[in-house]
Amino acid sequence: MMNELSIFVDESGDFGSYEPHAPFYLFTLVFHDQSNSIEDQISHLEHGLTDVGFDVKHCFHAGPIIRREDV
Image 1: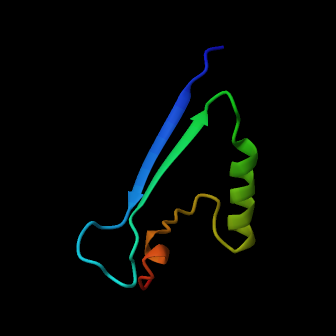
Image 2 (image 1 turned 90 degrees about the vertical axis):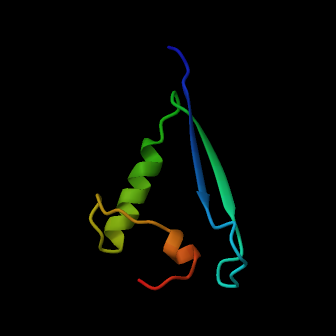
């Protein structure tokens, strides 16, 4: 079986003027060898979502939390 490496790149923040409530610019790289299953981690996330009352297919985005924005 051939190995396949997946790479996910994400960024959050702004290069504009400094804002005290969001002073950081984040750059993230995630590398995943596709021959290593993440099924256990996905299952853990799904159980956590249902434990707090969300549907397994619920979508969430942490950007507003990081930037301390209102709902």
